[in-house]
Image (tube, helix red, strand yellow):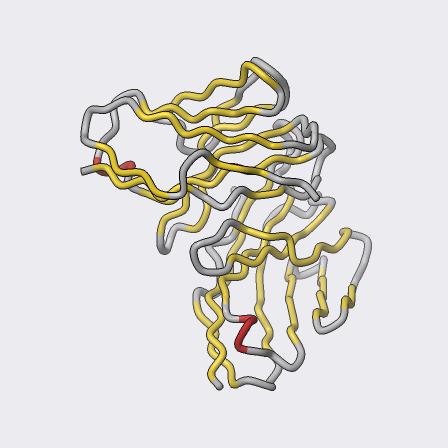
Length: 113
Length: 113
């Protein structure tokens, strides 16, 4: 079975802190994704990567950056956390072809105070 | 633009059938997906349908696709309390990089005993 793990289930940070969210997949998938999920807004794509060291902006990249130094690991970085970044963050991966199903991690609930 | 629409809430009684509806915009989508999210968890792929199919059945689940109207539905027969969850419809994203999906906002299914 594909396994996607995220470093923390719950995280509380202060405004202005630098925050790292880590995601690891164990199935040699090419594509990895970061979403945020907010009530009434569904899933919104922040960034995605289709290869090591490659990244592309999603629909809401402002305030975020990403890093993919190794194929299995995709990190989401909040350079200076703000309260409006309080959300559920979901990581996903997919094999690589167009329309491939995405496998999701359990999510990290981030609270910025 | 690209958009996936679904109603936000559905309430049914245990044992009844549930029908969750979705409309999408991209007629070139190759695959359409249904994901399930249980409380506090990430999304799990429930089923998918290839765009050249009209119907797909998998045990209690039936997916119907009307390409002309760009309408997708998920029917759950004999709905159980364990089916209570948020259900997301998703379509392959047009153009752009591989593997991107566009998600609806999710339909919260409540099953009353």
